[in-house]
Length: 318
Ligand code: ACO
Image (cartoon, rainbow, N blue to C red; front, top):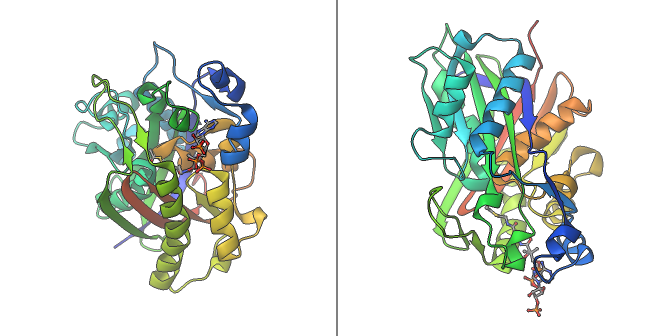
């Protein structure tokens, strides 16, 4: 099957910034506790007149613009989210409409929480593999998690933020792309499923932490065993941004140097399915990801789910 490569990226976060001190006004916590245990200092929250689809559309439009492609060249729109505005229309349906893709273009959401973007890359590869006329897919990760937070639970409400990241991928025979994905049914993290429900995100933090430090290095080892590569074949590793301690633990175990591991938790918090593409676009904008850069995306999260995907950033074709 053809592989895929990234030719454009975009991102969007709400304007409203919430600091640790702001949260300390609401629950019994402190800036010191949050930043030492998680690495988070600020996060962005949507306001009453904003939804996940607004962020998804903005990030997708920016990705398409930087890729320099026309809407009629898009063969699929795949959105990873657990906080879409509605189950139907899906967030991807809304993004496709806003982009102005042709009516016979598949668009749908993927529910794999913080691993969602990695899953979505693998699905997008298959969706456009035999599309000779429209070999491009828009892949978005978006969350409006603040909507589902219990602001009486200090162990969860301090962790999450809202945002979106998007990429345009192109299907090509020679594009080096591969992925390993996994999942098991485990209620360690509970996520409400619909905008009208009144339940909140729940989490057994210690259990998730133990799972994360075990699974992150293992996914990478499984991925490298599958592809026959080593970490030297990758310029950047983008971990799901859940907790700086988890990222540091995985990096140490794998012998990754700081120049290969990016972190933006401090200003975004955990944005679940959005965290990897949000980091990716930020790295492109700051020049840390350049043309030809090999990137390993690594996610874990609710489900439980996990996955790793290796892909090349080539930038726009023209
Ligand atoms: N402020 C102050 N104290 C707090 C806070 C807070 N915000 N939250 C918890 N505490 C207290 C606890 O009550 C506990 O007090 P006690 O000892 O008196 O009982 C103490 O701090 C220690 O609590 P722990 O839960 O053991 O703290 P820990 O060091 O494990 O950190 C954390 C908690 C940050 C949640 C950590 O477990 C973690 O990062 N887990 C992984 C979370 C994650 O990665 N989630 C990603 C998936 S999310 C998704 O997929 C949607």
